Amino acid sequence: MKRGVIFATIVVGSAFGQQRDVQQPHVQNARMETRAAAGGLDATLRAIENAQSSPAWIGYAVPIIPGDRQMCCWNNSVRGCFLEPGSNDRTVVVANNQTIKLEGPTELVVLYRVENRQVGKVRSFSPECDLDAGGLPFIWLTSVNAAESVKLLEGIVRDSAGAAREQTRRADSAVSAIAMHADPAAEQALEDLLAASQPDELRRRAVVGLAQRNNPQALNILVGVAHNDKSPHVRGQALFWLAQRVGQKVAESAINDAIANDPETEVKKKAVFALTQMPSGEGVPLLIQVARANRNPEVRKQAMFWLGQSKDERALAFIEEVLAKR
Image (cartoon, rainbow, N blue to C red):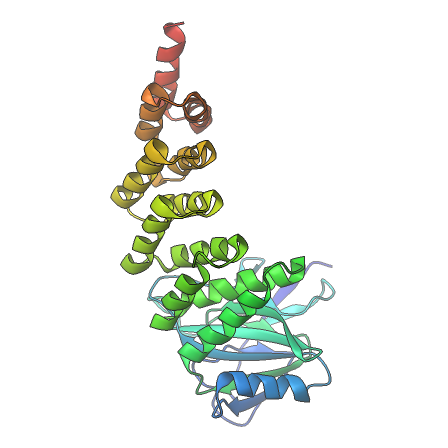
């Protein structure tokens, strides 16, 4: 039986005898509890971990960076996420009296799945996403400080270095959550993770997080990484995300510099690929320029390959020109 979605009118707060916090998502199939993080987020979460004899979800909301985004799942074109795995015949109950917002969310919902006295999973959503907790306890924390949230998530990322695949996924989720925090601590945490003393694994994650923020300070950091970082892998990662996340002039300058001046051929080739990620075919004239004039034959070959893949009329015309001269 296919997974479906049932539409139902939900009277907000009726299940718990009080009005639900507007920042809190609608959660079904859960044993709900609300606590204040008065003693600090880390201490509150550790206390819950130590007290829980079975798996549970812990969540809270913090301000999110501006942007029109929906962080949720979709089932049969309807919004709603299952937090726990299960059979395919389950349904998410979707509140049909929700307000349709014309602007992006102002809050980020951060969730932790705790089991065996440790955080096993990190997930983040926008508040309008309806959630199914799979029958587990769901503890909602109020009065959470955003900087404390960033610090907790940063610790999870650091603990994952060199870890197993499941912890790697947890670290990726934690970096994405940090990136969405509308707090100066988020940028600082990503810069700290990007420090030269950190393992490349963490540094590449930090590059992705900075790209998600897409503000001038974060983008300037990415440009600096693309120009000067000691690691070819990290430079290549920065170039890839610059091409997708910034305006044409900033991306073009950083990528052209890498193609012309980076000492590593592999980084030059990654910079060529980054040109293919620029929106609306903006990278095609640059690819043609590289294929026509770059001194490195491997780089020229890479540019020709991606021009052939582009199916752009300008690229095809250039390839015909090259073939006609042979």
